[in-house]
Length: 356
Image (cartoon, rainbow, N blue to C red):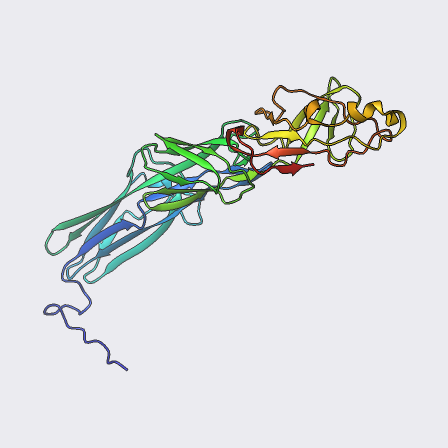
């Protein structure tokens, strides 16, 4: 076992642990705090404000003679204490006896964006009672608010869930701060002055968008939703039904087709009906004439890619449908489904996904 360390007095009559002179220091553990306000994570579901943390550390040593210290905050109300809603409150100062030390740490988060870089500050000063000398220190911080808004407005402007390949705008305040972003795999992002454009990946994602500001990392809470089904609205009655296996429509019926869910935008994808033959007709349609008339073939425009409008309707708003007849008088068409092509700008075919 090692012997205890020997502590020597630093001067005549002074306790061994008392500094030779008084001093003051103040610092933030991070140069910035990044936060996002309350936002919608799913239809009707909301997440509260999320923020990174910083620790404000204050230390004042009274030295051999003691003295007085003051703390002067500026824009400190843009921060909230950990576990609270704000604003952060600091003591104004105090008096230290000889050898006495004031030390405090305040863990806090962001609640309001800075108006300019470094506008949140805490100044500390200490005046030595023996020498009359005053020492000072200052710590500065920037509170950055980051926000995401889909380009297509569907419900809340604070919607943080998007469709595959849906586009959104990222903004931050103050806009002069240097930001960097990393989108999810297969997502796209371009940064500009004060904003960035984001295009969601081709697949469902919960990983969010990684951001960095002044060496502070933050995950912007954005999720990606895949298509679930194709829905048809009959014209002009606007009756709505899903298009699954063996779902029938009327002869020559005009339909409006759209992609679900409609609380996100799928204008970045395209859809097609998979070509297939019409077979085993029954009832009225057991006539050989219908073997060729009602097949879902390329000649009858199956297999064509249809762009999707921002409203999620097939581009152009209407699609003719005549391949299936009334129930119990329909041919089998088990492969009847829509393939969803998810690619950038709809200009090249990638692996299709099946939506039934």
